[in-house]
Image 1 (cartoon, rainbow, N blue to C red):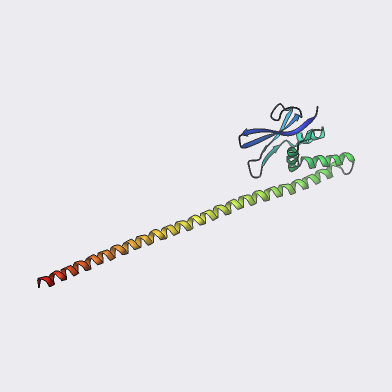
Image 2 (cartoon, helix red, strand yellow):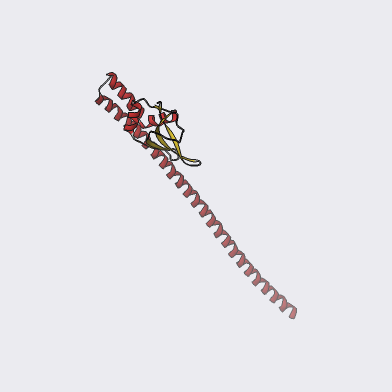
Length: 181
């Protein structure tokens, strides 16, 4: 029975969520499977992968063939590296302790890359929110200045109108006095 490690799609339309499963290659994509060994959510940034590492290594050791996408996910998590190192131990290239040291060094480097990406994403989000806040503050201050200018212009116009009305009254009073004299 040819066994594959592949993805089984779940989730709603345009919001896919995958289970990483071990299944007979003849069974349908979302059909019956032998064992579920993890999940993959590509909707988050970076993608969320939950994987039972030991089960995946065991199934690869038993001859299960991963699909291209499943191979990429397993490689990202280090399952393929662990399998490679265990094959080196079987061949006698190095002992199991050396293989474990190599794997831990690789895993530490990989975790550093992942954390750097998460930090840069959060920093970019913070920078973007600060830029939006500064732009919003600038727009608000421009609006406040415009409102204050309009209020000052309206007040000046009212004073001018009042002064104009007072001068007109004075001119009409002078004119009426001259006509009476």
